[in-house]
Length: 547
Image (tube, rainbow, N blue to C red; front, side, top):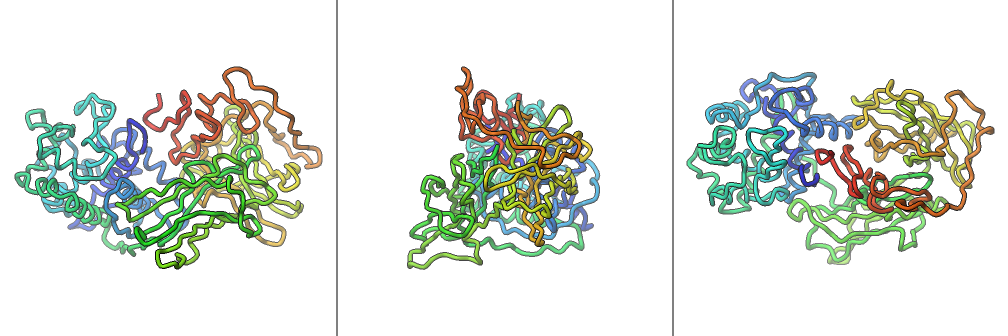
């Protein structure tokens, strides 16, 4: 995960450690408190990893969810997503108001005595220090861009299974396989022998035990990371642990240029702790009116895959860019699990993933797009019938999760089912909508008081999904125009595409560079979770892979 030159789980895990590194167990200060967001200029936090992760995590800020809790949650999920142990998750952390002092993080070039002292200040024993380093270095690696004195490889892996949470980091060390750039002989210098010096503090006894038994390795990692994630300032009382639902799911549909679809990589149904207990695990859908959906081509479901050492079983689903008919809409995705004893698995209604298609943001570049340097065109579709007393607002969220509501204007009918509402902002920078931290959504308040929202499951759409307006996109005047004056342009039969372009969603695109149709009409790069993404030569390229 993360591409050839990065590992997203490793970055999320490393962020939690660097954030926790200022903890003083004796004084009850520091710990996992998201202070790292203010410490990005600390030499220990050099490189693209930490700014990128904090941008990703901050996008999931919601009411009653702190950034500090998201740091711990991200690391917990990172470990489990790579087949690591299931670490109990506790919540209630408070986010720091500012940075801690520099020099708190153990760095490779520091002496062995310094490592021991810093881990001890955090509350770790010598054995736990060795475990924390080994467990932290079973995924990911070192980047030459941020650590040129350690490696000249773009991404130098810690072990031969850099995306799999296992004890290879220990076995290869004990077998003297020197893949780990930090586990080189001490004669190579402090930085390149940092792990070697830590591992050998107890004459390799801990590493030998971890190398001998992968389950012992996983058990030790669960314990030491559980302790690290629980490092909080005195006075903070964590609550939990949270027990996942036995059955649950989520999906993020998109509307692009009038087509409502379930893109790939955005929907999943999950079972927790049910391995070996179920006979069938199928998915279906209901229409807007609650009736059972019968179009077998609309929902494409992938085979079962496992996470968290089989504790979590997942079936991903999408519509493969097949538009959902506006006449019937979408009411829910249903997860249908029959157990071995013939009973049906249910858990507090989580077997039904409800969806409200009353208002839909349209993030296609004919409707919501960047116009010129600072102009922003935004559109949403509202289910009829039209009522002049309905209020539609676009919700603009800045990089610190402050939300501004901007009233929208009725533009006219999209078709016989939906109406179009729109705003044009001449200068979107005044709302501090940072490209990878800012977000947006839409809210409808009906005349009778009913409220409907499209906020991408309350996480908001990222500003980075908005592309430049295509030729012919409807850009409203910056002054108010009576809705009766503006009519939606009629659709015409599409002419053949010129050489080098392909017809996708009613327009001609270059599938080598188009973000929404990268490498083909059904491959949407913008559906990926990371905001740093481009389409290069028909491939979705993330983060540090960008040229």
